[in-house]
Length: 473
Image (tube, rainbow, N blue to C red; front, top):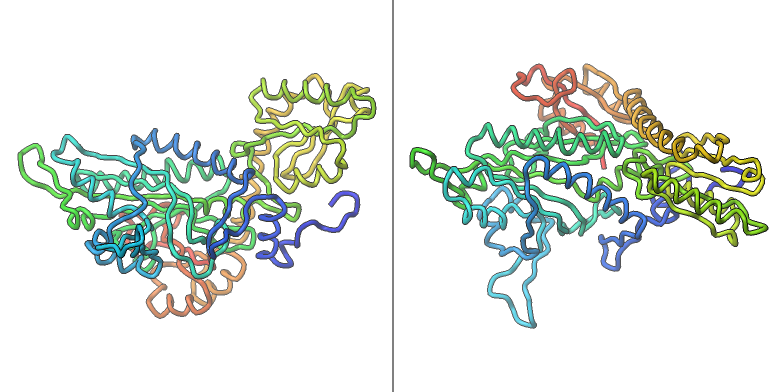
């Protein structure tokens, strides 16, 4: 930390979980809610979530899906219709048995996910092949009672989007689930979050309850652990059969639909913190940042600096930069600079009386901490270019950090060793049930299956696939 001050945060290398909690608190991102397992998202973090929502929603709409809203309360009988689904969610359910001071005739479940209630209405709305595909998305909150909560990563209530689609054929459903994973989720995570995710398929034991295939985006965090950032599920005809979701084909024959579901959540906030954060706090990629640049008045002894800084902020805004002016000169410059570092604002423009007299400002980039002196007149153009540089550099840095800790191995022993610090890529043919059990006893799981070159398995024979193994959140 500049000026020889004591670190504001616990160093990541010393205690990564403590560092994470420090960032949540000191960057003013979130607090624990009054009910165990809930969270309060503070304005700065919620602004980042709103940016995530906007970027993902744009991609979802480009994929043809439309937004709708379905009830928070679901009749318990709906979940009972798909046995594997209710079994998978049973330990996490919050169930309401009393309403309006009276015992309910049928308990209602607080939405853990909406396959069942949306399936009920899809079945009502679909009559013929002309109604297909039906592509729906919902932005909502869900409740899954969490025994080991951690803000943004595992909470009893969280925010997310959940897409639900119905198709005429298995191939159409499969192609759409894959399209969502690649063109919505991976594109957003790589191009906006600057997080280089792996794409793959979950093994049978890790699939979504009721799915026939689960596709996933897996990212490496700063401590080498994996975080599941988003999933897309092929549901086969399991939910279609449970809810009689059928249609008349072009020949007048009754056919059963094929369905998908897919979602990302506020867990991405945790991924953002842990993938990019450093010992000075959060680092936010410019394309995501609600505040891309802050114009910081160093001091203003004669009252001339603040108007000049305000005009500079306005010129940055006109250039398309999301900018904040910090003219709180009653608070020390060092304290304010540290605050913006903690919050991870990509670029800081420092305006002081001496530099202003020389017709220049100091521009600092958050990703690598470098500072340069910049002529005042060309600052807007320089900052716009710098934001692009920071975005690209953060993706390169995260990719290099992941790749250096990803090891190809040829035994379970070597996979367990590699998973202590990163990812292990192990031939899938070597991973039998005892191997999965042995890895599990060391808190290592198969995060996904991939082709050798890192793509989705598709029709690749099982004995040619690679299992990506890691510890995880």
